[in-house]
Length: 262
Image 1 (tube, rainbow, N blue to C red):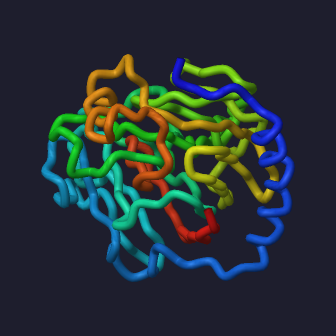
Image 2 (cartoon, rainbow, N blue to C red):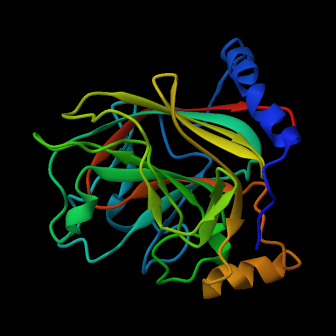
């Protein structure tokens, strides 16, 4: 087993999170996206070298950070990630985004109106050229179709696991309790991260999902290699953050960070 039992101490920690959140609202946020260019960010797109922005996938236009596929003939599973330069551990990350247009030709059906923010990720330098996703915790950004329900700010775990209610969760994705967000409206998603302890997903200030003890999955060969490099430890206390390109165009008008004390 690779997780700790829920204790009174951890329960007390959960009890004060609301106070931490309220205090954070009064602080100054730092813009990670300057509205002009991709300074501070590095793309890693599948089948391309680190730093190569294949097809001008990630671009800045009209003050927005845009993810586009108009220079692709076909998507061909070229999943991409735009990595911020600094690894992080204790913080709040806030993004304002909207889905636009149609999915790239050849994109998988599940990726329609689907993108994400990766946290606690591996360094892009450790990714293989043909690797699709970094070992990380994914906060899914999801838009609904004209009909039917689809929760937003879900959790997916490429090469990782988490603990919920004292139990190790090994399934790949877990749904949040959010409503469905349709159309091209702007949506604000926040992620509150307390190192290797509690992580919360919020939409418009309301918590929709929480979990704790993010860790590498020792069933995954690449994750095992990463764990070996950190002395065999599976628990993740921090890591990279990145924005996804998964075949559906998306705009970000804000990417903001508030660092928290350990």
